[in-house]
Image (cartoon, rainbow, N blue to C red):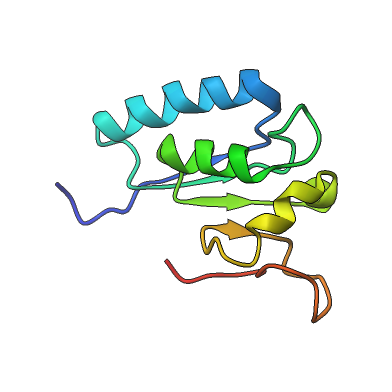
Length: 107
């Protein structure tokens, strides 16, 4: 093991096909010691637009350390069930105070 931290940044995960590909990539890269920390954009992980509590849990179970959102994060109101309580789920940081969720984290 080296002193290098390998971060895998995965762009827009779109729908079930994106989540399935994510499972294969993250699992393989973790197994091969090619990724120490994984960040994935999940704002379109539910049916191609939006994110849900279930798709968030699925991506984390696949090995993603942090799931990021964007302007589509609010497309499915189901996300409100977890956006305040799941520290590995981030909304955009440039939203005003009072918007649910958190825009940054320390991991």
